[in-house]
Length: 273
Image 1: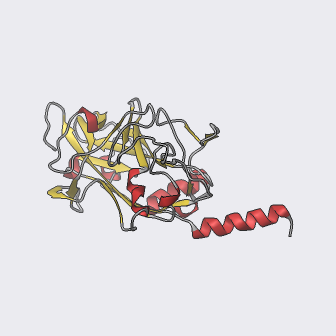
Image 2 (image 1 turned 60 degrees about the horizontal axis):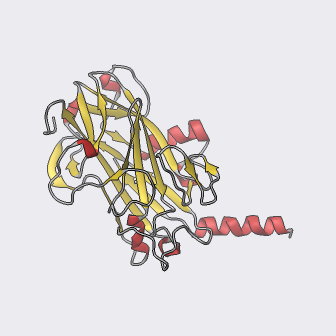
Image 3 (image 1 turned 90 degrees about the horizontal axis):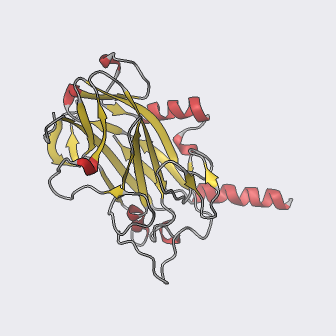
């Protein structure tokens, strides 16, 4: 066996053995000390397994993986795994199971790099997860990330269970919930980055977190705006922030659950419509 084959076989075994399972339903106390080591020091592979995106507010706000123009009936309230995988096959010839997450970092939520500064592209063998979808509304509105749950028809139930990140892995693997980031870039809008368990900033990227109690809607969680019956392309990205002190060897092979829920707020109101 050649040295090259040996390392390729070793890499394949690590990839199968050391997956970070990501479940997405529709992605801390920070601060470097001499005893904290960000970035993985061994090859650790993280995989995106499932994704489901939920849109609240009934018929007012909808979403699709394709741009159907103003034909509102072609849009839905949920993005399923099959929809995501169809998108990935057509654009990257991959499915979510093929996407490998490695620690990366970014200062603007658009350009990502490894620890040594090498640029990295999305949905690669050691990369970050990215996909695009289209939101549309029956009226002008602001779209927010929300912690409130919605039923199968997209109507808010008033209960918790909307956007959240959690894990069933024991400590110290459970620190994975502090190392992930997810951003949202509406076409023509600035990037908004959600940092679960937000703490002290570790890069120049501005982030926000969501309240643990009653949801309030303001500029911090306003992701983008929509004009009546005008679809907007939104790019979403999930990554492990290598500069985060919790992004170390302890979180290898952890199970991460990330749920996303969106709500539309009519212009001039702070109440979901």
